[in-house]
Length: 115
Image (tube, rainbow, N blue to C red; front, side, top):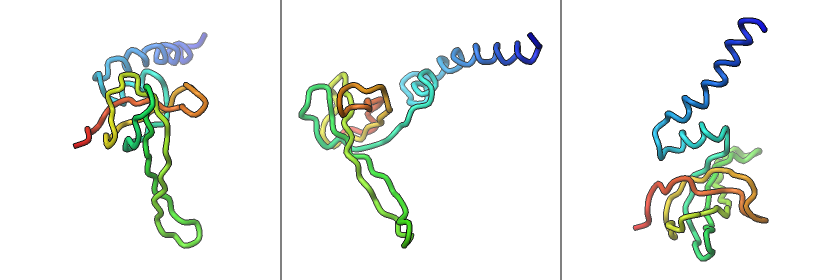
């Protein structure tokens, strides 16, 4: 093999070790370990299911013809393993493998508890 191929192979092997060195508890550390995944921030609107919460995620889009910025809200079901989140909490979600028929997101971090 050429020297360039050896350097590339060595660099790719070192990357996971550097990612694991990121501070614990941050979304960046989780993203670095698992590869690229979509991350969203939202507000918990329902916690009546076991290990599942419904999170309202707001997105701002521009109208294609008139140019006005519109707020679009989507309700997403997310996995809450610990069951510690409640209605009104602001949470950070990350995309994951399908966990059920409608659940493809999981809670990574509670950013702010409800008052």
